Amino acid sequence: MLRTKLINNHTIINAATKVTGKPQKILRGASRHNSVVLVRNLCYKIAKDHLYLSDQEIARSFNRDRSAVTYSLKQAEKKLSERPQYRNMLQAIEEELGLC
Image 1: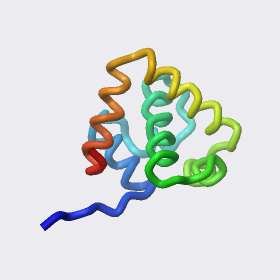
Image 2: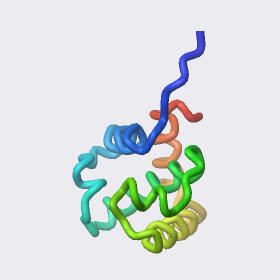
Image 3: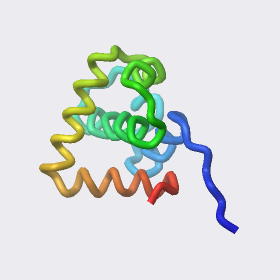
Image 4: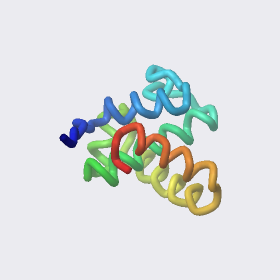
């Protein structure tokens, strides 16, 4: 029997926490440390790609400004094309969520 997981912003952040070790509070917080920002941007990307949320909806759920989310999504795409380890982190989070 195939089991599917219910995916929402909370489960995305839980998966990112498991894979990266960054606490949920830090990921949802205002930290500007590069390592936190990179993981947070991946959470935005997964929410955009798999939950089909608008930038405004993502911003609301992460307590951010819409323009900040839009910029972060562009940065995530750029880094995914440049850094294999960033792609691996995205894949690991998606596997944790059961998306791969």
